[in-house]
Length: 225
Length: 315
Image 1 (cartoon, rainbow over the protein chains, first blue to last red):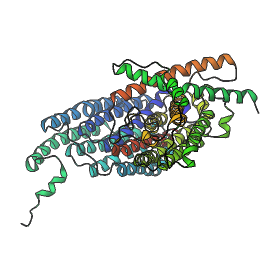
Image 2 (image 1 turned 120 degrees about the horizontal axis):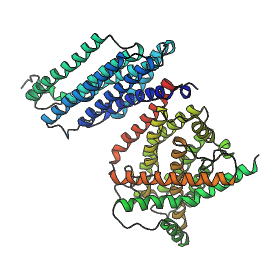
Image 3 (image 1 turned 90 degrees about the vertical axis):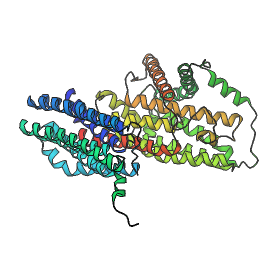
Image 4 (image 1 turned 90 degrees about the horizontal axis):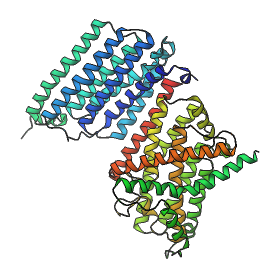
């Protein structure tokens, strides 16, 4: 069998990738904003571990820097900023229920199958082991998009947005030897700036509709009285 | 036909039935310790069963023949399930007769008659319990089957003996598919055996009970049979979880020394598993009935994720 013949560290790489995917499922339906941010941090940790392991497998030492960058940005800095916002807006106990959790999660499962079907040619022709991860990367991206649609609180939507970036970064690591360093720094910086801008947005949304629930933005429209 | 193989089947089936009350007594004992209560002795479930067996049976006025035969069918199907579950040896000739899907079918058979018996008397509680049990199992069964499919794909066989033997020899502790399937199966065990957070086995609180509501009208030896069947079911699920996802120290061949060592090892693992279950039941609160479908959908997703990660990453 294919899997049983791999060396242990390659098996662990695949296992961590699978866990990153399952965390996406968890973030999709978990009702508490705080836990969603925690799961996002954990997913970042898994992505950075997979990157570091891919560096050893593909013998590409510059991927260690990417792993370190992911670790600092997505495991420490961005979750810290999101936590600060949660504290600032007093959202520790806010429930962010998904309307149809069962349907949403089944849809996400269907998306994973779709991604697997579409990326099969890439995985088959891939030279390296990490080419098999491409279906998982695409699924993480698409599930992040479902999160943007189905979530109602702004903070979980931001977590969903960051998940998409996680998936893209993951894809770059798995099919190529990672992007050029300059591009990677640029993207990382973009994400950081985005999270700062999101903070400002949160502030404005909160001031104008007194809630971070995007659904109540509909009340802003003028009504005929 | 291998006579000593069938002898092992008989031996392990007897041991299954004999140890089932002990296992549930062990869980209760751990829970009492964790909750700062003085525990009942480990053999308390045996005393309960003896008391129930010696009592006279009281029939409800409108009980039909179905109500009378249901306990025999339930206990019989559960014992049959025990005979095909590898306990301490993977060389079971009975596993060739019925595979993992038949095992799920046997449990469904028992549950079907339990639900019918619950509705037979026509009391409100019985019907309510049956309806709840069927709702829960309608969500739990796909998750369980998906878990069985995942491990069957890993081993390329639905024969439980072969599955466990393959997983044991491959040393596949890093397989993500098995991790997810194990997590999903743990949630299925919790719901199928009526443990916290899905059902509370200790109370008869009208608003929340599921399993207890169906068997309210049973008494005497019939109640004892149903109790024994549910204890046996818990033990079968626990042994399945241990042997599929953590198989080591199982006996190969029919030597008495190997079998007794394997039996000691599986007993130790069962003690650890029971203690873990008791810890889970102590730290978790019972959830609302309407959250149970979401809980079980999570179990289904985990099992599905196991299968998908097998196909994507490991095939």
